[in-house]
Image 1 (cartoon, rainbow, N blue to C red):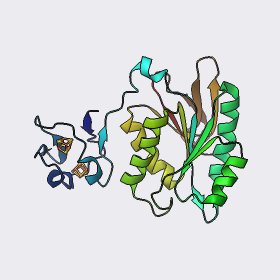
Image 2 (cartoon, helix red, strand yellow; image 1 turned 135 degrees about the horizontal axis):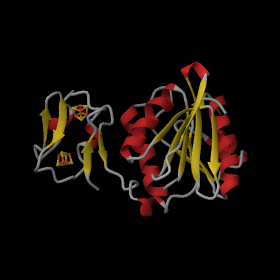
Image 3 (cartoon, helix red, strand yellow; image 1 turned 30 degrees about the horizontal axis):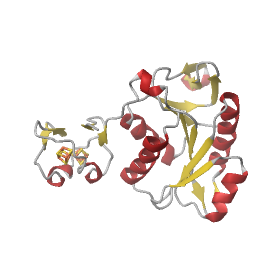
Image 4 (cartoon, protein in one colour; image 1 turned 60 degrees about the horizontal axis):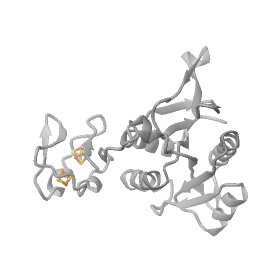
Length: 228
Ligand code: SF4
Ligand code: SF4
């Protein structure tokens, strides 16, 4: 898969330059850039501390987008339980999954057997331990890679995050990686059952107006939920 460097995320630290065995990364101004001799081997991806080097996804292709199914909740754990916002996400995911007849999957860092049991007993169909520490001591690049690996393998059509520091950090990077849209600040979430399109309602101007946003042509649809 082709490699890209996202200039909006790159901070110019240059850690990636010595990581490339082919000398294929240079600087354009204060941003890193791939040179013509890049062979897209992906070795440099993990050298970037902020997740600016990505494998360009295919989800911009509408035919490819049709192959995405099911809902992934990227949750958070506190102590020996899911956090309150993650439980709220699970409730919303179950509602959406019931409406369109799909499964709910949960991915989180720090899952033990007790938490796994808690998730399964709340009607989730599959649980993924991200194996990158806990949500309050994670490394952004490693968690983005861990979630992206699940997305590439399982192809969920909807991904839900809570509007927490973790969710606000990880969700935009994953949306960039898969070249899809991000529905942020959602205070309510509805789905068009026939078209399988999410509609996110978010307040503007201190709540005096409500905007409705959607991501109709790309998958996965990624939403960051403020409260549900
Ligand atoms: S993808 Fe491979 S060749 Fe291209 S810049 Fe990264 S390490 Fe170098
Ligand atoms: S390591 Fe990442 S942030 Fe640093 S220059 Fe390279 S691409 Fe940019």
